[in-house]
Amino acid sequence: MFIGAIGCEPLQLRRVHLEHSRSLDVYRRNGGYEAIKKVLDSMSPDDVINEVKKSSLRGRGGAGFPTGMKWSFVPKDSPKPKYVVCNADESEPGTFKDRYLMERDPHMLIEGMLIAAYALGARTNYIYTRGEYKYLIEIMDVALDEARAAGLLGEKILGSNFACDIYTHSGAGAYICGEETALLSSLEGFRGHPRMKPPFPAISGLYACPTVVNNVETLTAVPDIIKMGGEAYQKLGTEKSGGTKLWSVSGHVNQPGVYELPMGYDDMEKFIFEDCSGISNGKQLKAVIPGGSSVYIMRADQIIGKDVRMDYEGLVAGGSMVGSGGFIVMDETVDVFESTKNLTEFYKHESCGWCTPCREGTDWLVKIFKRIEAGDGREGDVQLFLDLCDNIEGKSFCPLGDAAAWPIQSAIKRFPEDFQKRMKN
Amino acid sequence: MSTDFTQIQPLYQPVNMPGEVAVFSPEVEAEIDRHLAKYPSQRSAILPLMFIVQRERGYLDPPGVSYLANRLSLRITDIWEVATFYSMLQTKPIGKYHIQVCKTLSCKIMGEGRITEHVSKKLGIKPGETTPDGKFSLSLVECLGSCGTAPMFQINFDYHENLTTEKVDQILDSLP
Image (tube, rainbow over all chains, first blue to last red; front, side, top):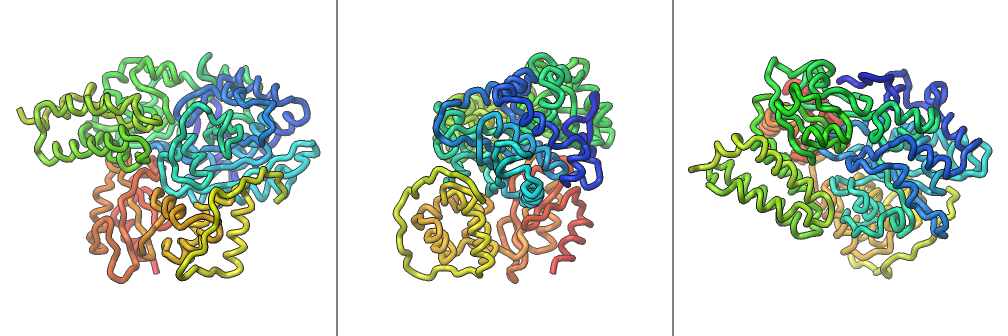
C-alpha cells in the first residue's frame, strides 16, 4: 500500500517512512515539538487561534467546518474547565488515514492537541479512539508516557506555566460515535446517542463544559500551521481550502493507499489514472465515491475529461463532496444496486435508534433492497426509495440520516440502469 | 495524576446487587483504578472497564455486570443499557478466537465473499455461529478502517490484511 505525498512536499506524512518514526527521539530530531515551544515562548492563545484562522484549515473529519472559527466559539470567560477531544473514531467506510497518522507519528497528534489545549485553556484532554483500533491506543499510550517523562505533558510544560494532560479513551464499535455529540455522550459513559444542537459543544460539551472536538488529521495539521505560519499553510492549498488533505484510496485501483495532496489538486482523472496507477486488471472505471460512503457517488463520465479539482469547492462543482476523503474506486464489474445495498445495510446497522426517521427508515430501505434482490422488484420501487429517502433526509436528529439517504439518491440518479434492470414491468 | 477536575456526582444512588459479584486480582484492580483516575466522572470509564471484564471473564456475564454496577455506583440496568449498544461488547459467551470479517463496500468489492465462504467452510460454521469446541466464532462486521488493504478480518484485536484463502489457512492453522 502506498503512503506518501503527490503534488507537494509531504507535510503530515513527512515522517511516516522514517525508522522508529513513532519515537519521541525521531520526532524531535525531525522538527517535532518546535511548534509548541514557539507557542509557549511567543504566542498568546488568541495569536494561535488567529494563525489557525489564517490557515483556512477546515475540519478533516467530514463536515469541513473552519477549525479556527470552531475554536473561537469557546467562551474565554467561562469558569468551567474546558476540554479538547480528539475524534479518532475513524469509521466512515473507505477512510483509514487517521490510523496511519497515529500508528506512524503519534507525537504529531500529541503536539497538535497541546497547541489546541493552550489556545483554548484546556487542562485535561482526551483522544477518543474506536475500540477496534486497540493497537493504536497502545501506541498512543506509549507516546503519551514518553511525552510525560520528557516534561511535555503535566505541570510546567517546557518550563512555562502551561499545564496539560492527555488521556486515551476507547470506544466499543459504534459508527455513530464519530458524530461529535454522540462521541461526547459515549465519553461520558452513555449510549452513543447524539445530542440536540444548540448548545454546541463549544458552549456545552463534555460534562456540560466548553469542548472542542477535532479529527486526528485536523489536529495533526496544527503544528505545521504554527511553524510555517497560517498564511503559508493556506497557500499550499486554495483560498477557501487551506493546506493539504489526506485521501484514503481503496477499491479497484492498482495502487491503493494514503495520499497527501495539496487542496485544489488538479484533477481527479489524473489522480486515478496516473497517481493511483489506474484501474486494476485492465478494467474500465465505472464509479467513484470520493469522500467516504456518505457522499454522492460519481459516474466515470463526471470525472474523465471534466477537470474535477480536489478540494471542497471543486468536488461540490463536480457533483460530490470531500467528506472524510475516503476515496472508493469501482470498476465496471460493480453493480451499483449492490454497492448501494451494501452501504444501506451499513447505515441500518449503525443507526443508533434514537430518532424514528433514521431508525425505521434505514430498516425499510434494507427490506426493499432485499426484496428487489430476491427478484421481486416492482414498478414504483425507485420512487418508493426516493420517497423514503426524502422522509429521512433533513428529518433525522443527526447527519447519519442524511448520510444514509445521499448514496441512494445519487445512485438512482446517476446509475438508473442498475436499478431499472431489476424491476419487473 | 494531578488534575483539578470538577467533581461530578454520580447520577444514581448505588444499589446492592443480589447474587454473585465478580472478583478480580489486585493487578486487574490496579488497572481499573488507572482508568478511573483519568476522568472526573466515574461513569466515563464504563467502556474501558467493560473491555477489562470481557477480557477476564470471556464476556459480560451477570457477575461481571454486577461488579461494574458496584464499582461505578450505577444500576444494573445502566450497565446493560450501555453494553447492548456497542457492537464490540459481548453479552453472550463467544469463541476464544472471534473472527470478524469486514463486509463493508471496499472489502466487499475486493473479495470479502471469498474469504467468508472459505472461513465458513473450513470451520463448519456460518457467520454468527461458534464452533462446538468454543474455539472460533465467526461474524460479519462493518468497516474496520482497513479499506486500502482489503479484504481483511480482525481476530480478537489483531488485524489481518490483504487476505487470500492461503493466508487465511495459514493464520487459522497457526492459532493454538
